[in-house]
Amino acid sequence: MAQPEIPTVTPPPVRPARLPGDLPLAAGKARMIRVDQAGEYGAVRIYAGQLAVMGSRHAHSGEIRHMADQERVHLDTFNRMMTERGVRPTLLQPFWHVAGFALGAATALIGPKAAMACTAAVEEVIEQHYADQLDRLGDDDAELADTIRQFREEEIEHKDAAIAHGAEQAPAYPLLSAAIKTGCRLAIRLAERL
Image (tube, rainbow, N blue to C red; front, top):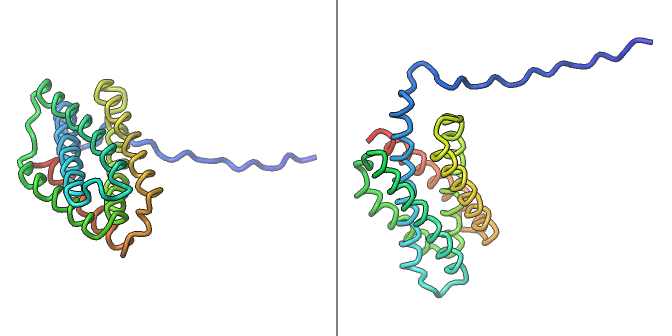
């Protein structure tokens, strides 16, 4: 009796650790820290804007305050890494100061679910951003990789909490989410380079 033919499965190609045109690893790590610090700074400012509008009046304000506290720890960690490793901040820090607060305040003015939609959109982009960084780092820098891994898990928790608190029920959720994600991706690219 003939054996049935077992189809062979070809694994997806593995991205080489370094590609032509990639930054030298030290410069790439400095860029990672710079953009991550900028992102955490932006997140702190988003939550500050939301809390300035919502105060403690809404049921979600406690959750927002908890997420803001975690983002503050993330920011403090990247601030420390920047100092220890001699990494300069992004030149766009003053812009993130205003833009982050404005985004937080604007979404909170729309309503608590829009504030949660903002969190869900931002955290979805950051979750993928951190995963990409972990892929690029590989086993090279345990301290940075462990930090990014831990913070990525917390960002996923924020996204999940935002969805559980009605993010997807926000007015014009698909449009709002897409606009915020596009802005986040652009902010990442700019902070990496400036």
